[in-house]
Image (tube, rainbow, N blue to C red; front, side, top):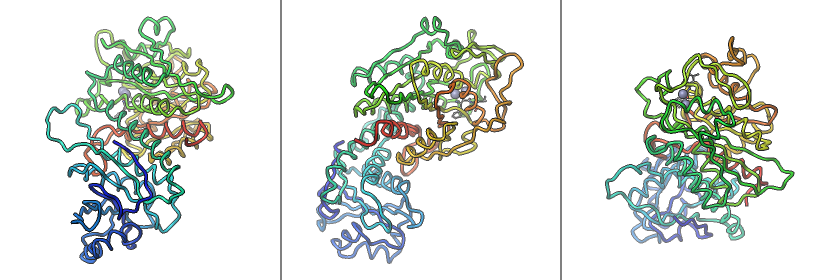
Length: 501
Ligand code: BES
Ligand code: ZN
Ligand code: ZN
């Protein structure tokens, strides 16, 4: 898909469809007013009839019958002024573009909303619109063999830029294209089944990224993991015929005295729970327990393609958690790479184990800032549902940076505390700590477990257990993987590299 930006107005766009936004109660402003005039008051009539109300996500598709250069207009509701923000805008445009694609449109224009009742800078809006289009367009049907689906878009154009803004908007749109492609790449990896996406396949993906972009790649396989003593990753992986790996991608484009950022993604390619077997009902969804790894791979690919000037490491501990004659068991004591011993209470708390080793390994590689992303706890879904990811960390500056990156990226993040009082839930009688802290505050004790392995390096943890999955098809996005974390990581890398292009 070609991404373009233009100073053309909505009424000048020659394509299959132009999308214009309308706010409740101040409906006919900006591009909508222009389109209404060209359509001889048709939008006004639909408004009067109550068929267009401007409610969030409402999409009305009209044929222009030659009165406008675009064959169709999609009028998309942006809700009440008081509730309007870029999250609303993203969702509305994702929905509109998705519907237009399903009707066979190939060339779509997105009209900026210049008459918003408050100042909106063009840059974040261009970014939001382009990313939103990618979010809406992803289908998640790569394993289907049936033909006859509507074709993909050929071209997406953001319209209505001021003449002086076109060049900077083009750079933003290009960055947003990378972010959109990265999001959908992460979704693809999450949606592919665990018989395809094994630890070896994640390493293969990393190797293709390295070959394409020139990133340095190291994959630690079984012998090396044993020699180095990554006991926690080995314990989790020992029950599966698909051997574990530690995948390390390095993007070294920063000045020597600058921070070294590391992204660490949980890469459990299937989480059956192991000997602490999960109930069968939703077990199939645990093919997506590598969503953190997918976000890291996708963000690394985009950072490398954009050649952002920073030093960034991407680490993926990858393993499959299965029950078998060789599986680890409750009661086992595991020697981690960082040196601490862990008493296994549940083999289903496996994500924190593999991350423990990867965090310790990242510190050895010289990382000054660690950000891990993981579908870590069911408790996080209880706390925040599928709407938001949790952020935890003790370095307020890094946590703030992550929260702001999330905001910029259109991903909802919410901070949870790491009060020291929770730590005793992890006390073990036989080892340095146990891997489960009981039911209360499960997302927090999961993070506190990780904190034991970061030493005094600045660290933030993203629990994407809920955010990584859309439970059903939604107007703005397909069911399945959402790519959660991907754009936040990318925006964070942008910040560490000193801002946008
Ligand atoms: N992968 C799961 C967490 C999860 C559950 C992610 C549902 C997405 C959807 C994780 O490995 C896990 O099983 N966590 C346990 C931890 C518990 C044993 C302390 C959980 O949350 O139940
Ligand atoms: Zn588990
Ligand atoms: Zn898991």
